[in-house]
Each structure stands twice: as structure tokens, then as C-alpha cells.
Image 1: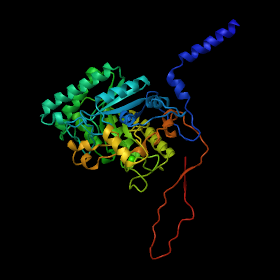
Image 2 (image 1 turned 90 degrees about the vertical axis):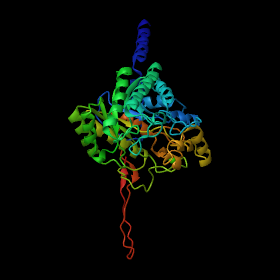
Image 3 (image 1 turned 45 degrees about the vertical axis):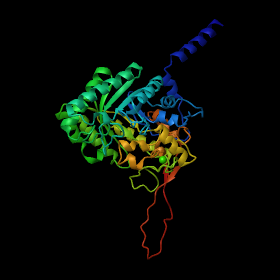
Image 4 (image 1 turned 90 degrees about the horizontal axis):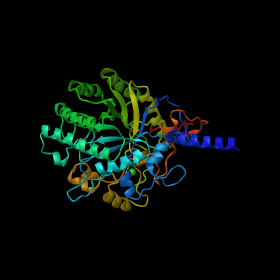
Length: 446
Ligand code: CA
């Protein structure tokens, strides 16, 4: 009897001592998702940008786990192998009456709220400072309104103070900050500055604040368009000005951004020339061609883009898996972060109902209020989500099987091959002659 008791005690102890991550990881299995394994270092970053979660929840979106139960979406991400969550931070995405510009209305308060939940779920936060009041990307790097009249010296000090104050808020809230970006897709512009002589001051200021407040965090610079051939130039400029950073990060959208081999080559060159870490900070892929929120999507059937995988859940997982493998095979490659995996439709009833939610809670890409800051783009084309078909959750907030990729990619998941989709078939026909259709088409396996 005593022996049996002690055996039971030992088992209880073992269960109590087992790391949560190990239990959660081992619990993930799939009968339908094929995953070819990738050998990864233990600390390889498998991130998901989830910036819009709070605006989504305010709009009525509910997220579920694989058991069909409503559950904190960050816990669901962690249970499926996600190690980091990325969140964008805009200085002041509100008009003078306090109406949000949309795109999640992602100010530092939202980042703190998300960061607390991310930390509670055992993951780290990647803080993506845009140093703008709204979207910053290769097309625009608009200065925050409050900084618009500043010369570069004053603006540099403003970036330093703002970064320091934001990171202090995160630290005081107990958020585990793993990485800080000093700008978003800063292809030759940042915060209204368009020459490297000025841009470098701002990046330096962001890095200085990060080193002071979050000395454990990595500092990342972030660029887009690896296919452009410009990365060697960016890295050379950063080196020339002795800009302080750890990670040279790239966006990689397979539709537009060249081949995986090119991605590997340009990142490896930066890593080997300057001894930097490299990663893919944004990638995504469509799991369906359908739109679910009455706001047209960037990618759909007939989009004139490179399509190396079908728009299926398996195709989405295969695309991300191949990006992970590519970064793993890149010199000093440390991780891959999926972009906006949780940005789904706020409703499937009508455009009118969704439009009201986008305006009120900022859950679309831009609200009409953004016109006061960005009249030429958001002011004209404001609306809902253009990437709901690239999320890792369906329109009802249920996780897609592809989410399990992050847990399964290390060991792989073997399945009997079955057709997943029909390969796109193209015909060239002579309109004066007889049109002959092919007798067979190819299936795309899992
Ligand atoms: Ca849409």
C-alpha cells in the first residue's frame, strides 16, 4: 500500500514538474495537415503578429481553441508552438476628436494590454515601432503630427524619449519584451526623413532607448523587398553610420518578393558581411481565395501574382514551412514571424454592419477618420480587412489546421498523400481554330 502511494506521489510530482510548453507541444497532433520536418535550433523564433486582436474583440470577434471552446487567443497561439507575438505601435492613431484611424488603433496602450496577455501565455513580445501615427511601409513613412515641425536633432530626441517611455510602460506592466524594431519596412525612409544621414540618427535613438530599458531585448531593423537587390546597400549604410542593431529583418510575401533562394542569398550576405542575425519579420499566405468581410482582399483567385502554392489551408502551411526552412538554412537565421494571423472578418452578415464596427473600433485597415492624417490613401480607400483570407483562424474565429504548423514543424507530420487542390492550368488558344481542352490536369498533393 505504501509503495503504491509513493508511486502515485511520484507521478503527481512528475506531472507538476513537467514544463507547460512540453505538455502543450506534445498535445498537438493533426490527421489532416502534412508537415515535412525542418531541423531548427531550440530557440528559433516562431512568431505571429496579432496587432489587431483587441479591436477585433471589441468588434465582437471571438476566438476558439481546437476543442471548440472560447479561449484567450494568445493561449491558443502558445499551445500551438508560437514563441513570440509581434505588435505594431503607432504614436497617436486618433484624430483631434479622439476617433481612431483603424488598423487596430494600435497605440502603446494596446501594446501593453496585448503584451500582458502574451507574457501570461509564456511568449515574448516583439515591439514594432512605426514612428508614425499610422501605417508605415515602403510606400509611406509619415512623421507623427506632434513631430511634424521638428528638425532632425529635436526629432531624434523625440524618438529616444518616446521609445524609452513606451518601453518603460511595457516593463512596468511586466511584459516580456524579446525584440524591439526601430522602424517598420524602412526602405530608405523613416519618420518623414528620406536621407540616410538623418534616418540613422532616429534608428540610433530607438536603439539607445531599448538598450537602456530592455537590455535583454534584441534590436531589429526591418526592410521590405528582398527581390530589389537593395539589402546590401541598406546594410552598408547601417555599417557606415555604425547604427546599433542585432537583427536585420525582412518582409517576405511570396506573391511579390522573389524566390526563397534569393531571400536566403541576400540575408546570408548581410549576416556574413556584418556578423548580424537575420530573420523574416513578416510573411503570410492565403488559405482561401474567398473574402469573408465584404472588403476585397489583396490576394484572391485571378490575382496576378506568383502562386507557388494553392490557396488552401495546406498550401498556406506549406508556404510558411518553406520560409521557415529557408531562414533555418540562412547564415545566422533566427526566426520567422507570420503577419496578422488573427485579423479575421468582424462579421459575415453585411457590409453595412461591418462598416459600422470598422469605424467605431478600428478593426478595418483604415477608418474614414484617418483622412485627416493620410488623405491620399486611407482617406480615399478606407474600409475593412484585405487579408482575412490569410489569417490562421477562419471567419468564425476557429483555428485553422495550419496553426499547428508551428508545433509540428520540428518533428514533421507524415500522412498518406492525397490530392489537396487542382493545379492551375493555362491554355493558349487560336480563336480561329478548334479549342482543345487538356485531357488531364494535375493534382497538388498535401
Ligand atoms: Ca476582406
